[in-house]
Image 1 (cartoon, one colour):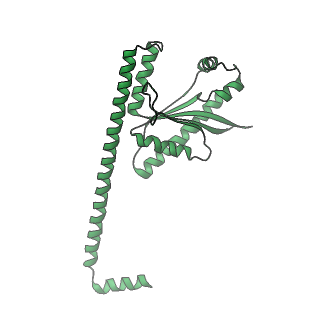
Image 2: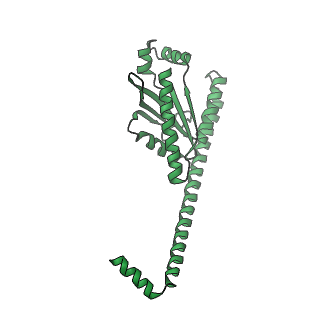
Image 3: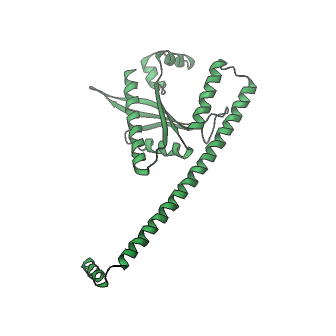
Length: 228
C-alpha cells in the first residue's frame, strides 16, 4: 500500500505543477478541485473475488490498476482534454488505457474521461512502476456521478426502472448545461481577445502621436543610428 501512496504523491505533484503553470501562462485555472484516494485492502480483495483472480500480491500488481486513484474536476469539457493532453505528454508517464465516456457515455448516462497511467517510483534500492487511475470530468458530470453512486448504494444496485429513467434524463440535462457553459466560455474569451486587440491598437496610436510631437531632426538622428 505504501508503494501506491508514493505513486499517488508523484502524480499529485505533477498535476499541481501543471495547474500552477497553466495559471501563470494563461491567467486561467482549468482545475476546480482534485481528489485522490487509495482503495482499502478489503475493497481490493473483493475486486479480486469478483473477477475470479488469485488472492496474491502478484495478481494484485498485474490485474488491479485502480488502487491509486485521482479525480480532477474542471469547469469546461474543453479543459478535460487539455489536462489529459498535458498529463500524457509527461515523459515519465506511460498511458496504459484511455476510455472516453464523454464521446461515448455509458448506457446509464455516466460521463468522464478515464486514464490508466503507469509512473515510476524511485525507492532506495529499486524502481517500481505504479498504476494510477485518473478520472477527469466537469462539475456537472461529477455532481451526477456522485448522485448516481448514492442511489446505487441506497438500493444495493437494484435500482427501480423509473429512477434509472430519471437518472438518464438528468445526465442529458447535465450534458446540455456543459454545452451551454462551454459556449459562454468561448464567447467570453472572444470578447476579452477583442478588448485586448483594441487596447493594443489604442496604445500604438498614442505611441505614434507621441512620435509626431518629436522634432524632425531628432527622429532623423534616431533612424540614422538604427540603420548603422
